[in-house]
Image (spheres, rainbow, N blue to C red):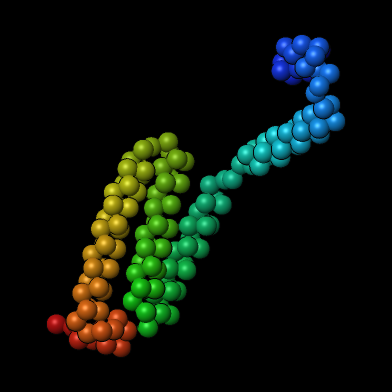
Length: 145
């Protein structure tokens, strides 16, 4: 009785005779394999250094994108957002490591400022496109004061 689930234990004899045992056994085996696979996936523990490496690589991609990009304003805005998200990830990693919530709260504040910055930046681009008909970086020198 130990190997049978409670569903089979509680069934009557007529229900057990009509049960397709081969399908049921295959279904149970698949379920056990899926549970083992999920247990293996969720049991992987990534250290602090992994998250810091990912964060530093994101920051490097953002810096390179800002340095290399000379044509598209949208890519420039995305690179700035990537810089801010990489910094947020580092704040959260150190906050979890030190068991202090202030880093997470500060990361939330940075996210709200970044959202406002991207909304204002896109609004400026929309207005600039309506007036000039293009958002190419070559024509942006008109914004210099």
